[in-house]
Amino acid sequence: MYLPHDGIGCKYENMSSPNDENGSSNHDPLHHTLHASRKPAVLASPRRHLSDLLYVEHYENGGGYALHAYANEIARLTKDETSLLAKKFFRSLFTEREKKSIPVPFSYFCIGIVHGAAKHVPELVHYIGNHHPNLIVSTSPLETKNATSTITAKEFSENVFRTYVNGCYRYGPMHAISLVGTKGEERGKFCDD
View 1 (tube, rainbow, N blue to C red):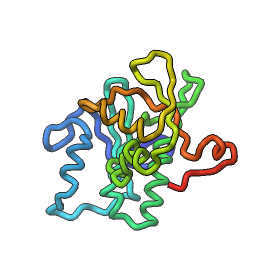
View 2 (tube, helix red, strand yellow):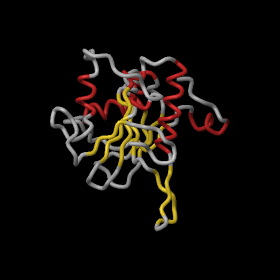
View 3 (cartoon, rainbow, N blue to C red):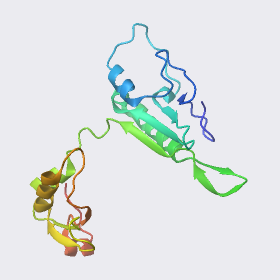
């Protein structure tokens, strides 16, 4: 499929039409990741301007499109190819189209995902709680309605991990955190991390 307005070709898979040799009818990111490490028996054909590394997924329920790329495939590219692919990815992702019946332009894709790109990023609540324990966090515990409290990042981290069960924590949301303090924000200071 060629994307509108930019002519970038992507691998396109539709949920309603079976087009996979395994009988699968959709681009499956988990399947793609699991089978990415296998070496092909036959060498692949040359890439069409890196467009073979972009995958389009169409959701029939609502008709949205998602743009996928994979960090392990991007890691094999040269620096220039990576830069070119990043430009193509973002240009495709943020391209807007117009329809005569809709006065406001709208995006072609609802989301863009680079699978595996954030593997090196630490778990942020744990990292901030351990490396910056005295930062002030604004939160509202679920037990108290309409009450906002300020606690340290270490206390917030401990409460999150204490109440974490089955993929969800039950302490309350982190409304705000200041990485440089109130005076630092007013002076334009930035966090070194």
